[in-house]
Length: 209
Image 1 (tube, helix red, strand yellow):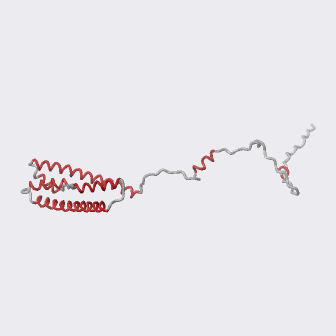
Image 2 (image 1 turned 60 degrees about the vertical axis):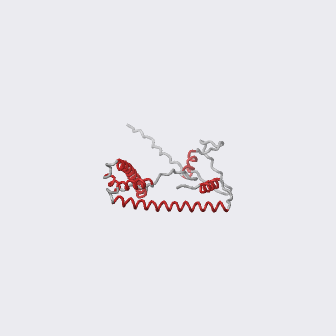
Image 3 (image 1 turned 30 degrees about the vertical axis):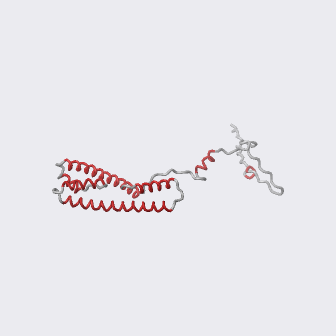
């Protein structure tokens, strides 16, 4: 695709405005719209030409071997537009590899076909791995974060030792609280359950002999 001098001026102006936005004049807007229409028409025309080229390529391939020269020229033009050679093209080129041009085009088409096959296999492998991951429920492991109030928050408290009152001796037993006025004192366990006394054995009687 080639631009004229006026079209390049409009394109340069549009790029400058895209980098440094400024208010556009009415003439600049109209010029940019006309350039966009021209580009769209050129793209459509290129698509139509490519369709005609591929149709001619099929006709010349079916007319081989008498159309070998025209077929090789059309095939090279199609490859320049991004055409991927088909198995029919490879089979036709094998019949023309006795000529230098046919051998060169065959070598080029074989390399392109190999790249296309590798690309399809790579894409199929990626899709297969993704489908397997979805089917098995496998998902990338994410890092777990501790929430406030969880076990991470309780850990420091568990490691802390209970604070002791400096005025309280840990070996000293707490003193019972005195009973309130008019309240009976709580009996001690020794008063409720007095200790049992061991029985005193009877005195031994000496036998008189």
